[in-house]
Length: 146
Figure 1 (cartoon, one colour):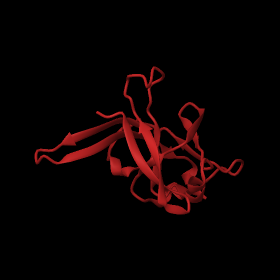
Figure 2 (cartoon, rainbow, N blue to C red):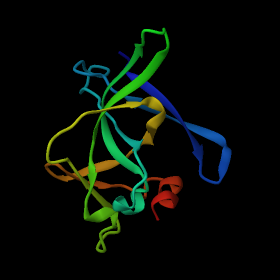
Figure 3 (cartoon, rainbow, N blue to C red):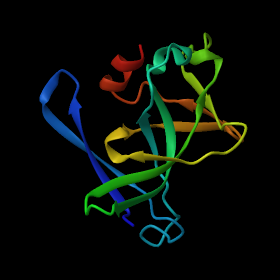
């Protein structure tokens, strides 16, 4: 088990420069004597038109980071995430222009390769089980979801 995944993210209009997103997942132990950490991330999923501007990416909460060796000795770096689903077919709300996501009807955990993790997602809860995606957090995110 691991507690941090570092994802290099190219800076907007400067692809040769990277910013590192430190994605944390502490499990049940506290992070630095504070709350437990299970960060929100962008996960690459099968491209589908049903998710609108999400374009094959969905936000999810990291539940575990771990490495698994198969019988051939190859190491697989994996992540367990709780994927959310897009509301309103991935179309931004007309009143504020932000995207909505919600918890799936049946809570499901997905095991994905860490290469599927695209960076940190910035969500804020509006009511239990429903979040708004902050697509205005930085220029790169603004450009991807506009």
